[in-house]
Amino acid sequence: MEPCANALDSATTLAKPLYNQLMTAHAIEIQNVTRRFGETVAVDQLSLTIDAGEVFGILGHNGAGKTTTVRLLNGVLTPDTGTLRVLGLDPQDAGAQLRKLTGVLTETPSVDERLTAYDNLAIFADLYSIPHANVEQRIDAVLGQFGLRDRSAERVGGYSKGMKQRLALARAFLHEPQLMFLDEPTSGLDPIAIQDVHKLIRQMSRDEGRTVVLCTHNLVEAQRLCDRVAVIERGRLVAVGSPRELAQTVGAEVRYRVEISADQQPHAQHLLEQFAEITNLVVSEQSFNFTLRDRETVPQLLARLVAQDIRVYAIEPQQPALEDIYVALHQERG
Ligand SMILES: Nc1ncnc2c1ncn2[C@@H]1O[C@H](COP(=O)(O)OP(=O)(O)OP(=O)(O)O)[C@@H](O)[C@H]1O
Ligand SMILES: [Mg+2]
Image (tube, rainbow, N blue to C red):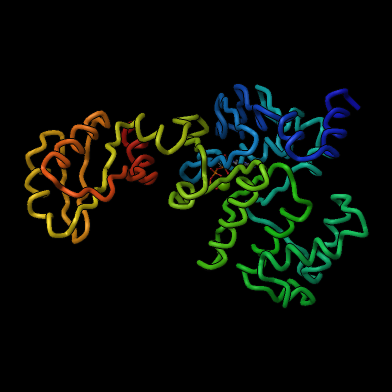
């Protein structure tokens, strides 16, 4: 066993904060990776780093290379060129160790339809080396988290599509992995189950410091969950950053919402219309919405309103919609 893997083994027995500290900077490093299937370049000179503890989204059209990237990171595929590191390890050499530290929800997860949900999970508990004494309790906990406790003794063949997806998610969470790969995790789930999954992802990242790599087409989901996203197109990295950073890249304008005392609305509207930096002013019952190109003008605007005795209850920037950013990024590239 290589020295790095030894270090990692002992690190897994340490308390989580210290473990995270050891893992620090990058949970994942992708350097100049290319992977072809015949003539198709599925991943094209991709370089990317993902920090420990972040929820990182991989976005892209159908066939962009998201699943291929995840399969490379899981050691299922070998890169033609370039290097990959997952928790400091090469997924090609350290598959067995990484399987214990990572959880994977594949794009089309398969569950054993002949077995019950409980038995499906018990097999994986064994594969993940969960200590015998903890298995029952751990399985019960994930079955509860994914709303399957009542149906745990049924054969999975009789499950609906969404229930199978929930079981696959429960399986990926079973061993409380340090790093999760979730390829389209909410596909086929009902709105309440989607909310539950979002809650769990947030809990794993914010409260427990775990890293989540999320492939999704759902831009609202990405906006809600991801600290940073990478947009890929034909295997190439188009942009990477937080939704806010990406908005700047594409020159997306930031909209502001101002809340003003109802009786002063007409006066305030007049002042806002006079303010040269404001465009696309929308007046609603309780507030005004408008675009300001430069945030440096916010204090001036505020000063002008206050000087006219307007009671301003709130002024807040609205997060630019990831959907608009995504469309703009693709339009920019024709
Ligand atoms: N095993 C394979 N054999 C041949 N071509 C493949 C294979 N896996 C992926 N590809 C090709 O590589 C490209 C990237 O596919 P990939 O599955 O990574 O896309 P994706 O971004 O996950 O798409 P989707 O959003 O549809 O899931 C596609 O052109 C696909 O046809
Ligand atoms: Mg895919």
